[in-house]
Image (cartoon, rainbow, N blue to C red; front, top):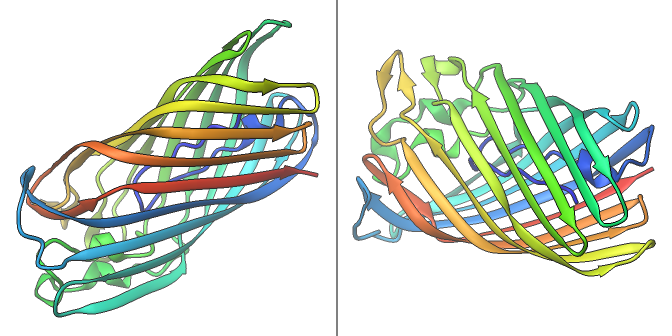
Length: 292
């Protein structure tokens, strides 16, 4: 099963190596899409009148990688971002490439039998400042109260570290996955520094079909993220900390060791934030991965 670790809308990383199913050396690639409409405005965790404020965000991650062997792979991720935003009196959009990421994956442990599977993977990498970060310099008075330049910027202008780990366990037709990622941020353009970000994903599932040629599974997923306040020249930005928790179903499909695909919907069950922010109403995720 591929294990996506979709984190903050800006910096989500898609880790696809588990979809290779131990296929050995070779190239793989695909695309992962996350669509998130933001339309709920909260002030310090309490819902307030939105005045029509919104962000409709689409992040399509193109990824390509190489499996060096059954345990080690490297992968490049390039997001393509489109964001429409506005309020009752303003409508605009931003689009372009996001920050390029290079990550490495290592399957640290694996145990396989007919009825039982368990593996543990580790991830590490770096994000490069390849995207336009000019929105970070947008004055607050030019935007609606719940939307900041840090919400719209396509990139951060910083080199950031990425570390993570994940597990997958199966007993007959039941399985469980869990993964976490931690983004270690540095100061970027305009003396802005995004806060370090912790994201998580996991939950139990059941194989509806478990064949030699293909698998089809349904999974109940709990996911989320938490981050502190960003800073400008070392001064905390009061409208930037948040903790979000989602639940929702996910469908997983694999065909041989070549193809994996996913479709999921996430509904927020907990939204906490500092200051005034526009927060997500739901999100839809989809991904397809092909091993050459």
